Length: 349
Image (tube, rainbow, N blue to C red; front, side, top):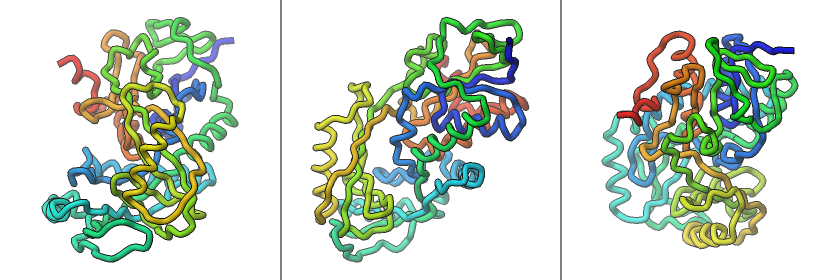
């Protein structure tokens, strides 16, 4: 028997979840294909932070992203009956006098002044290396992405619209009215596959620049910090004396397997950040779907109007996802212009 829906979504990471929420809110019908092959959303740090701490620049469209994402995750907490949003400050350990000078220069930028504390702290923090002081960001925190993805998949599965299998591109037929896949007719199909897009024959021409990232989780009972510490590595509190430490960047290894080389790199960096003893309790890896211009890849296939891509969220997916999903939905359903900075048409220029 044929099933008729408004949309098919392929991939249920952060991008797929954000777009699914737009469809649910608009009472659109859809099914989701997910084969659990992509782990970037699950292993991500999930930090939302509007400042690039390496150069003290504002993240692209950061303030709007945070304004949009805060109520988005609050509504998901209520819907899924879980806690997802953990608010904390971020303290950047200065590595030079130049860092401190650049911090004060950045305070003059209107967007950043909302989040950057104008008073540099010279406090000594037990177990933390930071002789040159710290700059503090407020209005920041993390989303528990692993819990979000797991809980949302369970929620969608109970709704009967999750299809847990690998999508077979060769069985997709493009019709005058949309697409047909096996026994499903849909007006549109949205591919939000993360790194999996490299196998997608319709969109694998897009310049995805995948970066493998690895993190470790440590147990450090003597490290009593309730903020994210940013230095040569980040150390993020998870509760119960556990901290996530990361992250590595590897542009050649395209597997999701943790490596001893990355673990050693992270532990070497950790020696320059904290002085307390710890034990490693977990080690994870995933592939970030990134783009050279640090903008997502969103839009309609140039030859097939029923085929849409929603990808390339990169390292700040928890911030970017809700905003671009809303823009894409309004573009498809209400004729709203797609932001030119995320539109895949930019690659044709």
